[in-house]
Length: 374
Ligand code: GLA
Image 1: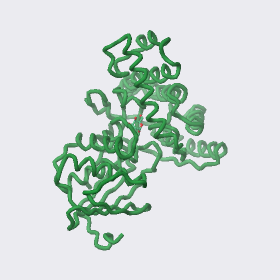
Image 2: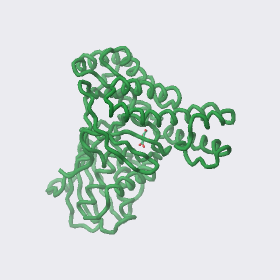
Image 3: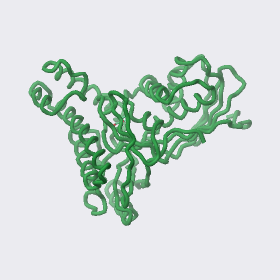
Image 4: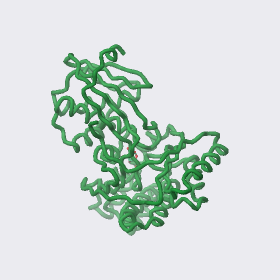
C-alpha cells in the first residue's frame, strides 16, 4: 500500500492472546473464568495522517484496505470486521478519531483458541485511544471491543477474552467474576511444570454458529429454571439441586449444557484454591474433568482435541490437559513436567501425525502482561 512508503510510526502497541486455565463458556453465563495473557501477540504500529477521515490498515502477510470513518460498514472480508467493528464502536463514544495509518503483525496463531480476535480488537482500540487521546478507560476498551465482536463479527462472545487481553498481569492468572466484573490476580507457581500448548491446527467451521447455539441453549435452560425459581437471572444463580428439580421439564441436551456450566463454575473456584496451595495434582485433575465436560456435556470438542487430551492421559509427565477456548479445535493446554516436556511434545506430535496426518504445533506459554505501549 502506498502509505507504507512514508510510514514513520509514532506509536507501537502489543496486544496479547490468552489462555484460559478453566471456566470455559461460563463468561456469558455470568460465571467465573481464570484466564491470562500469553507472550504470543499482535503488534500494531500507528501514525496519524493528514486526512480528516481516511484510514489505511495493512496486515503483514495478509492484505491492506482503506476506509473512510464516515462510511464504516460490515465487510465481506472477515478479518476486516475486527477493525471496522472497533472503529464503529469508538465513533459512538468519541468524535476525536481522525485519519490514521496502521500496520498489524502477529505471531499469534489465528483460529487456535488463543483469542487472536480479542487481541486484534483490543490492540486497535488501545492504540487509537493513545494516538488521539480519547480518554477511554481500560474497562471501556474491553467493553467496546466485546461489542465490536457482537455487532461486526457476529459471535455473541462473553467478556473473558477482551478482559484477559487488556487486564492481565505477568506471572498471574485473573479470577474474574463475569457477573460483577470484580477480579483478583492469582499468582501462579507451577514449578517444575510447564504450560505446553498443542495446536491441533484444526478450526472447525462450526465454531461461530455452534457458539451462538450454546448461548441460546443456556438461555433456554434459564427460562425453564425460572418457572420454579423466579429469582434466577442466569446459570450463575443455579445449583445442582435446583437443576435436578427441573430435570424432567428439560430436554436432555439442555440439562447437559446447564450441568456443565454449574460444574465448571465450581471447578474455577477449586482451581484457584489448588493454585494458592500449590496442589498441582488437583490442578491437573480439574483440567481432565473440565475436558470431559467440554467434550461430553457441552459438546464443543472435536476428534482432534479429544485425541490429544486422551494421549496426554497416557503420559506420566503430564498432570492434566484440556482443550482451551471456544472449541471445535484450536489448542490443548497441558501441564507437563519440565524434564519431560520435549519428549512429550515429540511423542504427541508423532501420535497425532499418525492419527490425523497433521503436523501439530507445540509451544510453551507463560502468564504475561496485558495490552501495552512499547
Ligand atoms: C470464546 C469467547 C469467550 C468465551 C470462550 C469460551 O473465546 O470469545 O467469550 O466464551 O470462547 O470460554
